[in-house]
Length: 280
Image (cartoon, rainbow, N blue to C red; front, side):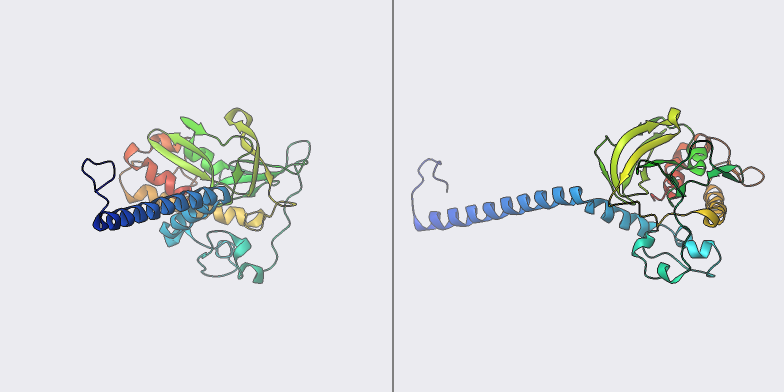
């Protein structure tokens, strides 16, 4: 049926077959090239991350989707429908304006609130996935794990950081870490470009230059929102620990022990870390 086959003859039936064969082959190659092109474009534009976050957020239980205005008591019950991105929420704008973003870090130690043993410096903003954002004087922001996540995870066995020049998107992957067999992605609290890597000894993970002229922090928690959020997160954690066999309960006062993840059985570690860090 093909010209390179012995005893092939240029007959009408052969010509029809070859025409159909190469038409189908050309269509498949075109579709493959189109798919690859769209995939590359989606990765560049952060679309793939947005799709993944939309799926992850959909899979979270309603108890994990409480609106920030429910946490502060402004409404009795309100479930977030915007993936914790208040920048796209029409309802958020109808509530009293949130306090202004904190000023860039000054020399010396900033005021710190102690919430059940969790230190929350006043010059930081907080993402619902348990990262903090600290504006710096040069226009960049410092990003790291908040006190809740640090105590929950302890010291990770491995950490995978994006190199300088990488682009981050809100609720996309900021970095990954491994604790035992559990590998968890940490959600980015900001849009922007990574300028520097940190690490545990430095007390921070990434420096990022925000996209646009300045940091858009409307989706980040601050001030009076922090305490009710931390209390709700402790309730969520207690519920997860009691859902199956762990042999763990929170200490008196509600604060988890240091490096709680090491005490969680391997069989449930990925589940608990994933749900608390919004990666169900």
